[in-house]
Length: 633
Image (cartoon, rainbow, N blue to C red):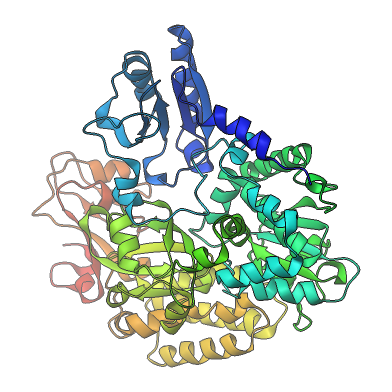
């Protein structure tokens, strides 16, 4: 069997060699591009050309520090890698002149440095010592932000495809499956089913043709783990799929990726072409006799297609609707053939399992939740981004140690984990270990890994309404419990947020939620009540306040608030007047302004623009307090 060892050694000699000239790398993941990475790249190119500098200019993907985009990495001969954050074109010019040309880092913009290949620079933080990275353990994300995802050579240099070589060089299909079972790896798509068992079922299924499918239909609001892996390290997913294909006896695989991920699809297509040219995909891989090809199927963005049987229907050209199970895809999947389905992160874990060994992988995490988990941290948190942590870490550590705590020093209120299928966990559960079983006991679920952090200004009734509105719209409508149940629950939640709720509505929501959870056909319907049931479990008082007092404690529900200008604090600066699109504010410069509640759209711009605390949000009894009838004097 042909080996990549000689090729890998030659690539490593070049890849890990100290740079002979300045090297500049720009983070060009979707988050970086959205923050202006293309303009930063153009500014650096122009400045380098104007100064006639000999610079190696390249790009990578997201390192995980989405809060600090655009990231720019500079390495001088004999020096460490210095990473800058929040770079804009104007800053890029100074980085070129002062650091690239002058040799002196612009310390006030540095977010981290890596000691290799040179000595660290005094006064600058080492990457692994940063608070954002200290408690992380990167396996799936080990190459993201570290390599150019469009160059297979850089993946190979960092032990890429070594696991596939190991498997094809002498392991039987049964041995491969046993190693995955030994690792304890569970599906990272949300269900948490043991990966090795899933592979074993498909391996043992009778069929003349078998398929491998990668679920990259990431649709949870606030989730971007799979996108970042596909953009930053596509070959890890391809390698994991190839190993799975060998294990179950498949020669063909599909990646089902939503079309809203154009950069991920572009890099996947390039990675597949490069892998085929290198001989690690296609016919007779590495002269082993094993054949495996991968195709990409672009999805139209239907959330229900994250459910595996709906996903299979979509690949087949049918409408994405779930099928009754059994039979399960392991026995009757794509085009009626045995099919193994895992998500992006699960497949990206496979090269790590075989590189380090199943037992080593299993040494990380908890008794029933092994390895690491990637989370997308979003919401009212200081450091948004992508973090990979060992299973069993607490939610407090993720939010406050890695995420840096709550923005503007506000109080933490809740975290939504698992997207629309998950649940909202309160302050008293901040020290809950993050693993599959603990989250289920708390009424939530791991999900694919989205974490939406909320502060004291968040209304939990409105959060439940937001997520249920999403799942209700995304329901395929095939089964009555989901189609009708989500609509009825949404009507009740909307009524409550508009101040029209009744005391009986709480019991109605709980009863409906249990019925839908127990009778819906697929996971979308079965988990759709979770945001309602967890907010009722931990924040029932907010529902009761909305219903009994017609007030929103967080002052977030528009129908329950009135905006009012305090005449004692208003100095007539006109900022609120100039920002009011509905023309509800009247008043002249240096005179007290007044809001007409009949014309107010309750957009909140006046509240946000006022620098003197003169604009107030009133709710409940405050709206008709003496002297404030209908929000006016």
